[in-house]
Length: 198
Image 1 (cartoon, helix red, strand yellow):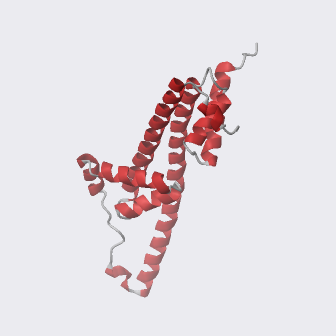
Image 2 (spheres, one colour):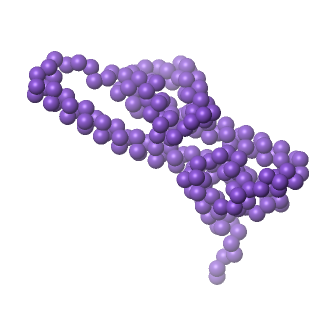
């Protein structure tokens, strides 16, 4: 991936720069919304096992969010949770925890409880991995769409590779995701622009 040159960006016509700024703002909004909705989905999945805050912490951890991105996701998730419909759905799935059962008060019962918790932990780990994969895919699709928009805006001013690289740099897309987005955008452009073999 070529790295974008900031001087090149400053030389673009003012109207093109404004269109890029608007496209970047829209992309940031969509990415934040995608993250927030995915976070709430994880909260709903984990609601029978843990409280909202813990589930949200798990989301932040598996998606490796920090700084502004983390704050935006937490704020959006809390805001969405205040929606009566979302709140009532999560209330139905409220945290039940493991609870205390007198059957586990014997040595054999304690062993059963330990096995149950271990099995639950392994199941949760699998859920986290599957959920992370699905969320990464949703974020990559969102970035793909907006990176294509950057290519369209810069069509007369820069090659597509430079436009995609600019998008990825402006949105500070993590390198693993950035490589996927870059390849997908170029593959789509190849379908449209490469001459057809007869």
